[in-house]
Length: 356
Image 1: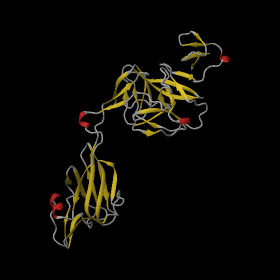
Image 2 (image 1 turned 135 degrees about the vertical axis):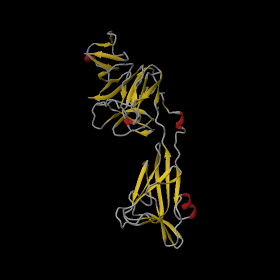
Image 3 (image 1 turned 90 degrees about the vertical axis):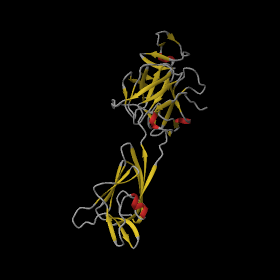
Image 4 (image 1 turned 120 degrees about the vertical axis):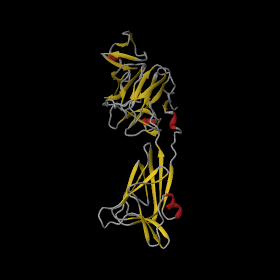
């Protein structure tokens, strides 16, 4: 039976952000038709003649700008539109370049060039380039003959100013954002988790107003409810020995040998919240968006099938999920009362805390 903890993490975007999936748009610079040259305000050259491109101001299509730069030297041939017996194309000569750019808030995602010669332009492979840049330059190492250039771009998503996290009835949730540093709100504590000699350790690192650095997996504890984590302009202090990993989207767990998800036990027993195998034998499983998981690397001895919290709210060093044996001697609960091995929860033996 697959165990799932009922909690969700919702990103709050600014209203102007629009749809979650940003749609790409594109424009085409056309050099082989009269209409294309007219749209760029380039005079059509006579047969066997050329019209040099202006290198002082860019040519624009929509919001995309194209700026020509000629090779240095008096003998360098300027970039130009050439008319060869009625056939038009843009000619870029050795050492010259074209630079495409978009305004702030936008990103160029793809450039495609068509023509009889396009293989001697840097950054271009099989007549195309793809990536994410506001500005991209293509330099010629030999004469290039180009008829059209298509540029795709997108509007950047507006960065969120906060994210919200819902902590369910268990009092626990996990959190992970690869690119956002977040400020802990009132009423929430954040823990890092690790194993030492097979013992599970939770360390309270992030209290109110502390900053969770970007890329840090965190176990959260608080009363059930939805909490707002403001995005911080400060980076925060990186933490050491944290075995919590995460992903911004649904993704398969990786970089370990055993993987644990935040969950109740198989029977959804109240108070059984902890880290449990998310797949048989601790195998990889699909982690939820902006959630963290416990990642145990290869070669770690004594790893268990689960690590229950049982209501603990402070760091517990040396906690183990196996019960103390009779040989361990007297066992006490957190109130200092003597209990037997049938007691469920956090117990103390010889100054150490255990989960049984």
